[in-house]
Amino acid sequence: MAAVALCGPLAAGCTRAPAFRLRPLAAAAPEWRQALPATHEPLTAVLALFPGGRPGTAWSAGAGRVLDAYLAALAGAGPRTRPDLFPSGDHALAYLADAHVAWTIALGENGGTAGLDVRELRDLRVPLDGGTTTLRGLEGEIARRAPYEPRLALFLNPGWRGGPPLPDGALDGDAFRWQLARQARRCGDSGFWAFDPVAHRLTVSAFAAEMWGLPEAPLIRARRLLELVPPPAAMRDAVTAACGASLERCTLAVAPIDSSRLLMPAPQPR
Image 1: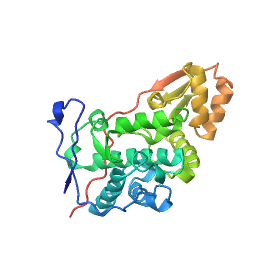
Image 2: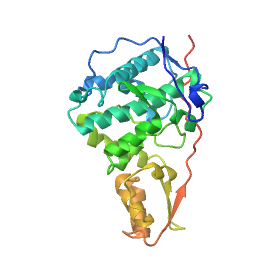
Image 3: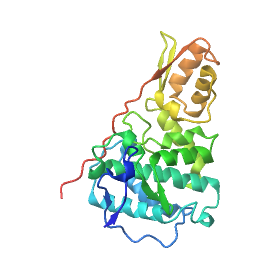
Image 4: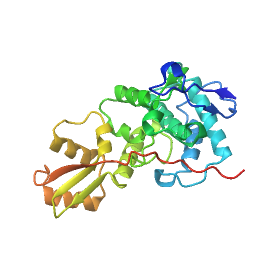
């Protein structure tokens, strides 16, 4: 059994780290070839347990072993330790976002961290790329590498029930831009926006505050978000007709997200 030290933000000297241990790891490939589509298959298989990006199918020991093997590969090599295996910045960003998704699921389904809230999960230390990091650290690293791509934040829900859905597959550096647009459309269709045509009020999810690289002015920010995270076509047409192209005839509001833990699938009986 490979022990993983996890330290919360209030754990002086890591003395109150939860008891979290990886299951026996499958042998990882000697090299991590993120550029090859086959390397994304384990995480895509795990994400199939989350129809619509939410827990749906019972968790299984087999799924846990697949996820552990994937995490072992991520822990052994990455853009820092093996930059030669990442032919572009998109491949490195895909690796980091996939790591965030995979660890969000792993921490959420593990009994040793079941009692923690999202804030604590976000600051637990986990192995990655020859060292350790946290979900929050991954979020900051992705924003640093892609400061003008706020849609990447839509892959980085650290476990909030009301946050964006999990992606429907692992990110691939070769299909990265298409996958960004796909995830943005999925979020736009799943509660990111609300519109009251009578009150002329357009409401956006508070998760938008997690998205970097957006204008500060509220109206300009809202117009940019409508482009990046498009609502369903009927809602977009209604907003344009009622609010005007610049949204000047509507008021803007923010809907708080449900920040409670997104519960992972229940284990299957053994």
